[in-house]
Image (cartoon, rainbow, N blue to C red; front, side, top):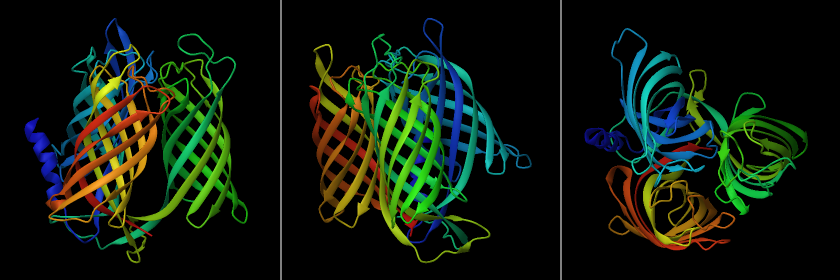
Amino acid sequence: MKRLLLGLASSSLLLAEGSPQALQLRTTLSAETLHLPRNEALGLVGLSTTADFGRLHLGPALYGAVRGERGGFFTFGIEGGRRGRPFPGLPLEWDAGLFVGGGGGAAAPQGGGLMVRPHLGMVLLLGKLRLGAQLSHVRFPNGGINSTQAALTVAFSADHLWVPEGGQGAAFDGPVSWGGRSFELETLRVDPSASSRTRSGTPQQPLDLAGVSLATELRGSGFRFLSTAGAVKGSSSGYAQALAGLGLRTALAGPLGLEARLGAGLGGGGDLDTGGGFLLAGEGALTLGTGRWRGAASLGFLEAPGGSFRSRTVTLRLSHRSSVPAPWKAGETLAGFDLANWRAGSAFIVYRHAQRQDGTAGPIQLMTLRLDRRLGDTFYLSGEAGSATGGRAGGYSTGLAGLGGETPRWQRQRLFLEAALGAGGGGGLRSGGGLLTSLRAGWRLELPHGLGLDATVGKARAQGGALDSTTYGLGLHLRLAALAR
């Protein structure tokens, strides 16, 4: 395992500087059944997007319950490994990897929340499609889940263009096709039906959600989307959902248009009765667009077929669109683009004194994934997701968006300050309705090859609850640039 982790870290050193390069991303969907104590079965699905660095791959991954009694059971973290072709003449590939992350929820025996999932599998290559089977082992080292099972996988691969900051890779000079992509901020008002009940048997009360979505345009008027959201107001702190689906847009008159979305995914927590966790969602929206910006107001539904949860939803959404290139044989010459500077990384955060529902308090540990969009050399926008890995807080998760500012660089160092707002709950912490604020100050060391270290101290506070803790963090990031116009 040590050699695998060292190999994944060193893969970032094999990248080039200055010129666009093609990077293959593989999106994988997996399905398996975990065996929990007392003969309980939990249907688990996984979604990962990994980048290929030669035979090595690395990227974020999410796992969640879709069948059984644990709707709202989520984990997310980093997945990486190695792939190879055992028989060059056959379209077969072996795949060995490891997921490390945090999460839990729905009163599952996850302990502190740390999850490890090694796997070994075989994949059939069918062009950009990959069909596979794995033998996986899911273990929560400080909890009661320890299960070995078979998993089925389906994956899609595609090349994307980027500009890494260091190394020796080959520059891309082929034709491209430009496609639209939108980053969206959204708030949802969820109004449950009269028949909706909590897992405790009481009537389900309304709640407010906040989240983000990424929409990618398809040919014609269609698009696909992936969204995540968490509770920020109401009595269901700790509720979270992740949805994927398809949509259609059409123009009405001038800047006005119509939009429809239909999706499915996972959700639960906060005592909502989502059964095994499978969700269906749909909406119709009136949109108003100008330039790269679009606002939308929609009416829709959200329901859990395996539980009693049924609701109407009202959604407000603000999106920003850009065009991104992808290699395409019948496309145009790559020209006339801008570079958007990003930082992608992961960190471990410690809450020094987290207040719990049972009246006790103590330290907890979280693993976070984050993405920063740099706005020049001083300010940046930040997005972060975190989940508990220790401290008897398995199931506590956060999602934050904010603004940061950093000093000019001197001797590869910077100081920074950032403020963020979002959702946080679960794990038995006193987080009120779920609205969470975070303020951090830190020191940043920029290393060669685009790598960097971050150390932070700050404050996390639940605005509607008693959670109020000093935080400490240490993280690793990678600097890169994305092509857009």
